[in-house]
Length: 85
Image (tube, rainbow, N blue to C red; front, side, top):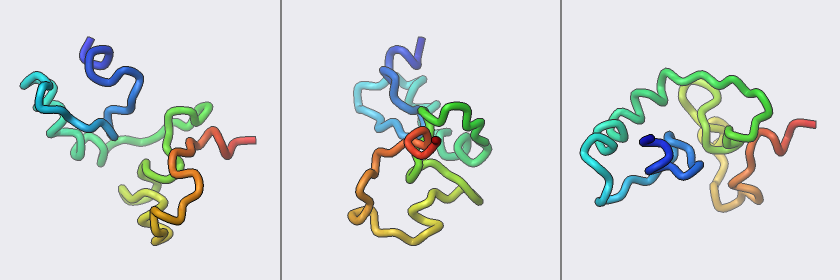
């Protein structure tokens, strides 16, 4: 129910909270970084995993690992599925 109300098919780990969000949702949102530290990906078809922004190694995303300037990324919204042949 919370996912349907707030996320609208968006990713919880990358959600931008709003002042109108409920206190319960805001509390869950505050735990997001702690939750993110313990998350491990099951790649599957790769459609729900951000290639650049989701964590890969030691809770770092590829931008951090490769020390890439975000402004130079041609497809910043690419998903892992875009690279699976």
